[in-house]
Image 1 (spheres, rainbow, N blue to C red):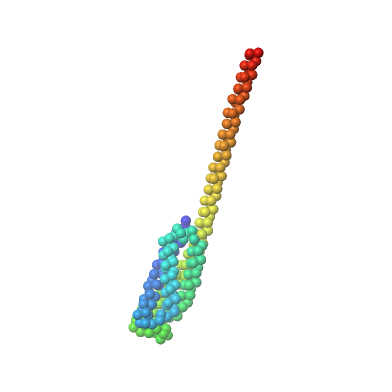
Image 2: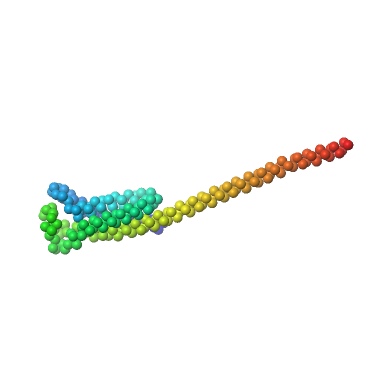
Length: 209
């Protein structure tokens, strides 16, 4: 099916997008943990959402046959990920839309950035922000494709059921016809000897008299 092939293609595209988002934000999370600092919400939210989305994309890609039968559930989960990614992008909007030339550490209240190049930090946050927007669009497309897969798979099931019903109906008709043919043949077989026997007996009685 074309819808299934498109769904798998967009799943692979989502995985390619989510891997760098998770990798860059994991670097930030690791840095804050190493410096005994709390990870800011605008990084932590997007990191958690990207991990969940990546695990879901890999699972549905590997186990596509099962996901095809549960395409409606897959569509609803993708729609939920769209909302979660929107929330993550919203939290990341301030560093993601900041000009890297005017990047100010104090505006983000994160001492971890003091030991890191400002341009590198700004570039990674802006890249995560941009890839997050692309991931939103991608998961919305797979939401629509999953609905299409669900509709096509449901139609295929109906066709299979109709074919099985027709084949079983034809088989029952053949059995009933064979039974009728056998009963008529047995009836003729039983009736013929009786009629011949009576005629032969009557002819003998007439002969002796």
